[in-house]
Image (tube, rainbow, N blue to C red; front, side):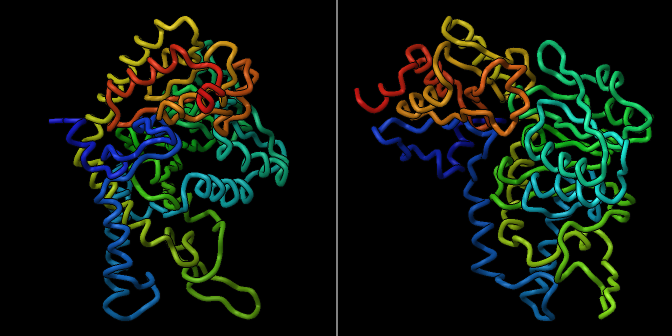
Length: 411
């Protein structure tokens, strides 16, 4: 049975000892930026250094072989988590690296002048800036799916912009500011009907809901471990194996090649090793494996259900405050984006900090959205499965009087 109060005991950051500068208890509502880590993940990271500190694929001795087996096992865990094959999982430093790997490995190699790349204005910088560069390099054209009145990208609007010249459609399954869930399965179908590939940024979905890449039929999918109770500096790229075989690696060096000679001839290993040059973040991989085990233990259905209840409760409370602007009341995720009327977002975040409440303020790396939202910055509240309704009550109470950030420091 799901018990949020029991779950909170697994997280050292939630042990009740953390306070802000004036002693207010910690209320952490910035989970879309990064999540807290359960003790089992911290222990797994340490176990690499304490018990098996050897490089992977570099040694013919027991310690190195143990690391090789562990990395292989965790790659399989990641694959099982999204219903993929082990050889389709590439370890990366996170979503940003994974998106760049796709953009340069696939886009720079296969796109040509006049080809089309389709994004939305709600995308994170990691799914925009690499494609800007690829457009500059190749002459491909970037287009955008119109968002509906709520700010959601729909399959219907993809159909309006896609053409036979479209080669790439790259969208977030859940956007990181407005928090809407996108119908990736239908968009994959539309992309494939027009000869394009579909790339799914799952940074904000993989931690919160079940993912089945075979059902979605996306060609690539990316995620970051630190948003799913795992360590920073580790994530993964899923790619259909046939596409991974055709792509060029983003980085080259030790561990990704079978041989090379003085004439510059290089034979790369088969994926995923082809994309994993250099020493990997091995302690991070160990921690990522523990994070996946932990999420599976809690249950992805339980996580999604709990966050839905938190959102429903929060919206019902926040709507009673006449001083708020809520930008995504009808979104499908644990992300709520708002502003206090006539208060700059970062001033409001500073004021909330004085109450022990951690939220994100600013443009949230989605800088194309400001024209649509008619504001330069917003306050983003984001839940995870260890958050409680009591924490929402603390937030709502603070927002009743929030305003002058100087009150946080000089009262």
